[in-house]
Image (cartoon, rainbow, N blue to C red):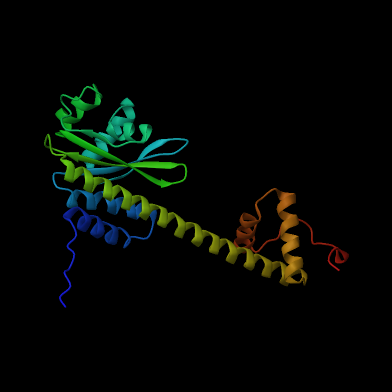
Length: 241
């Protein structure tokens, strides 16, 4: 029996390739940078790309494909207007087919068109992590380029970028937690050797030092491992029966 092989649509193929190449990078910053570079190569008529991130405290551009989009995004922050900002602020996709005639950004649009040669933009929203919203911003040097297929592909890339960023953050948190546990264990060993304590007694002593010095126990442990010095006086012999 011959089984028909299912052929994925071009947008799905591009999104799959995008996801695979993104995950070759390990850190969040590397994946964001890889994402904007891949967007330029995979989305037809996309000449420049960036990622804008909104947190509870600030809005910033965290990755750019080149100097054109760096300048364009910088002007958005300076003027407090533009498609990338509108996308993260309104939590929606923002499309402009012709920046010269678009009335939404009366200062930014003409400046980007005249000084950078950018004529159309497409900013797709993605949720990277709880409390953090981003937009993948595509810049084109031509007008009327964002057809339904391009918009569908851009949204698919935004979704894949969100997954890659969230995954990188999880890996980073796990790595930091592992490093913290190793550092705490090393500090325990120093206390045990210095004062002849058991592991439980050494941990209790570190907790007391943390309370007295008002330094988180993980940071206190890091300091002890680096300096090999224990703050405060030695514990009394009867403190740990």
